Image 1 (cartoon, rainbow, N blue to C red):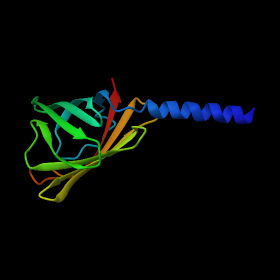
Image 2 (cartoon, rainbow, N blue to C red):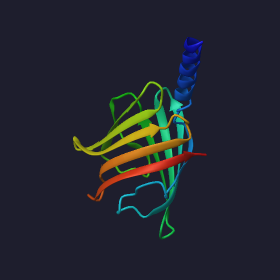
Image 3 (tube, rainbow, N blue to C red):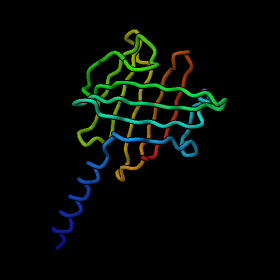
Image 4 (cartoon, rainbow, N blue to C red):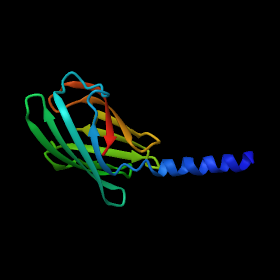
Length: 155
């Protein structure tokens, strides 16, 4: 009986890991997040779409405290190789290396400029598949340092 229960629990655990898929629409929970002081964001929606094998388009729509809005799209190749950052409203001259766990619950993104690491993002989807945390640390395009943890809820 105990062995059957353990096997059932392991099956449910495996299913919950599969539910950790990153694609979908995510909304930033500003109250639960620890934003860097340089950020003036009041809301952010992030949509992640798989556009090919291990290729993802991440679409951000942000609003700042002054009411300004910004739309950004980044294409990420989750193959562990260096790729130029491409998309909409992305600064030129950057490259990224993205790696993910086989179950889709974690991602690591390293961004470089002129061969030097300027930012690192560690993404984790909690086992319930409804919450994503993103810890990011580095230097933005203006040379300002940031270290923050963002909490997103699946929509």
